[in-house]
Image (cartoon, rainbow, N blue to C red; front, top):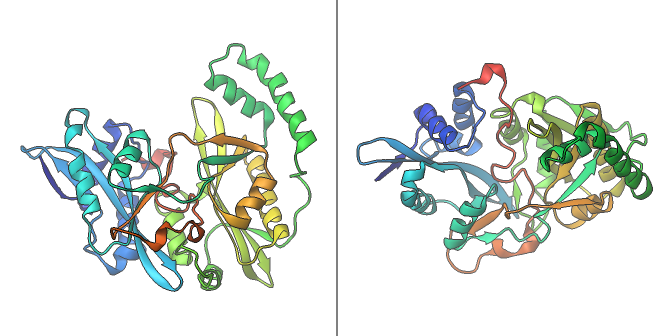
Length: 373
């Protein structure tokens, strides 16, 4: 077995390996090329490895591991994280899959490694290479808001394969509605006119990032205009992303980003809060952005809104405005500092992890008719 560097020209090879192993990357070749050519780190470092291909001794490609560089900052210093993504190996060759993992962890000029979409197998392998769970105690606790009670009840009944779904969805939905009426906030209250819905990321995000990056002792992925457009508008379609900002004299003081997906089996449309940033700890701004997200999701025909991660004040705010929870199994987010021994990155106070980190929200889950490989 042999391992070689992947290149942009390996699009069809990568897609073939991933698809036949159950990883459906909804990205056509044009988007694949742009995804790598416009990556903020690769623009300045064109020789950076985008991944590796596992070949048999006869040269047949049977495995792949994608390597996505992501730029972070901590107290004014740049750090390079790499997200291990789209790891797939044909069943009969999986004993050799460790060759791909070894190549990934042997990279030079990297500050830390991440797996933000771990399943049981990849999580165990990361731990075998001394990776740790991201130091955020609530990261596997998903917050959720039910916004269409009947459709959500229907999706749960379908998932559990309970008969008479068409009849039972209504009483089940009514019970959920009643519980929410008793316990929840009024999510449908009028929100501030300072909350604005954008179609794209403009130069105001550069100004916002210049202020956000000054927060001390906080590890943050870069969130300027270029980074955000690359993250959300290359591999994903713009229609899947919702941008909500809170303005003060036309300057952004907070924003919330949603992405959508649809599960055909359970007929469930869902929005996820993938990024949520505030310049100051302000409950009213946080509340207005969340309520705007819920109202937008309702109008868009979603059944639920979910949120993973965040720490400190933001997490407290979100938990205070939600009483539904579910647990992520297996644990999804592992990291490992590149240098052996004690690392500043082991300090839980530095982390504010969310679905913007790693590859969690990079790729589309829906393939349009004009995006076939």
